[in-house]
Amino acid sequence: MKSILGAAGIAIAALLAAGASQAQVSGTMQVQLNLVDGCIVSGSTDPLNAVNFGTMDFGSAPTIFVADLNAQAMLAGVPTRLVCSAGASLNVRVGDGSHAGAGVRRMNSGSNYVQYRLFTHPGGAGMEYAVSDAVGLAISVPPGGAPFDLPIHGVVSP
Image 1 (cartoon, helix red, strand yellow):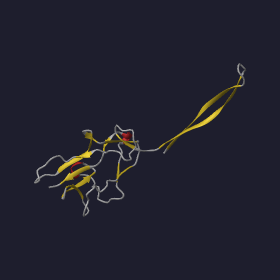
Image 2 (cartoon, one colour):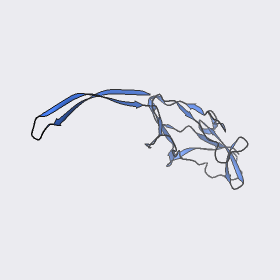
Image 3 (cartoon, helix red, strand yellow):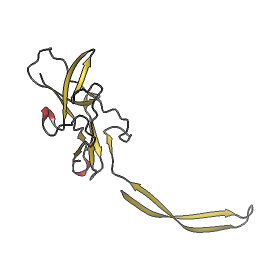
Image 4 (cartoon, one colour):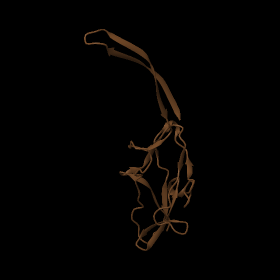
């Protein structure tokens, strides 16, 4: 947290009587602002609570596919980006999803399920976001607080 303090000069004029002379009182008043590190979704003005992080769309594939399907969070057709205060500490925790079972995340269509995994980098690279991870993963904010893609990438394996 960064505290910014200042002082503002104050002058108050009081009319003593209509058309009469003015009395002035002057002094100082403390002015302060506490800035805390934080993040927002790029293009948003809202802090990160109950924010739309977009959609992770694996596209279309035949029921028998032979290569991994990859996706990342997209918002309005572009990767979801975060902007954080320079020097902020970011801990990303990803929920289990709506249909997790037996320690894996799953999408469903009726009674059919497809498992998926989430990682910090594309193609299953980096660290995996474990199911039921109460702690989450520490993520480095780029120097100077530059915008960066939300570090959540999905993989569906055949």
